[in-house]
Length: 205
Image 1: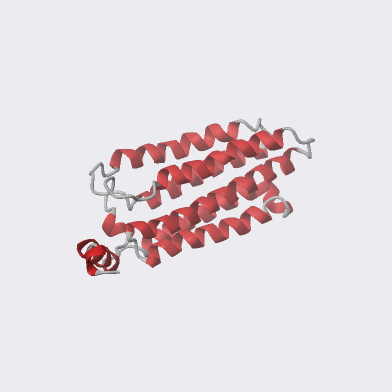
Image 2: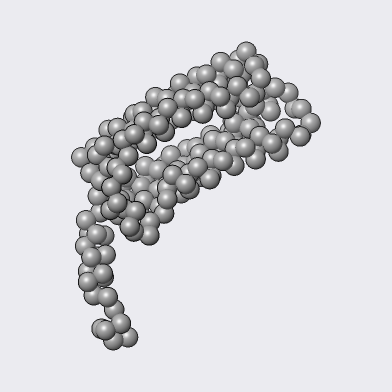
């Protein structure tokens, strides 16, 4: 392959971008605080779901609680999003679309488990929630991998991989551990808030 077949300028720019891999705080200064926003609102949504389970309220209360609280976080993120065209001109993965598609599978889970014979309120709720936590874990792994295309440093991406790992473990445990069948929402909310706070503190600077 001759030099004429290689876009030297594009190659040099690509190498330069890779060398200049940045942290999330540096690249998205207006949104880095969302670690704390999502951490707090997810904890509140988990608390609402825990209340629903303890009082054996109808299962459709859960989506209202989650889409309500997490929707607020998403709206805040949208308001602070950098609308510049720098990234839109590149062939980058759409992270919001990827995570949304993964989490949309929650509706499939609810529909599928709804036709199964009832196994009791707590077990049915725990199975659905365990699958949902697993889906969020998948979303975190997808995000962590996709951020490489934006030249985000490994340390920041590993935080998403770590989140995916503990969510996978919790997702497996929720339906089978009696304590988690009842208190799984509170445990998830606490762990998620701790993970988000740790990410915010560890990744600054």
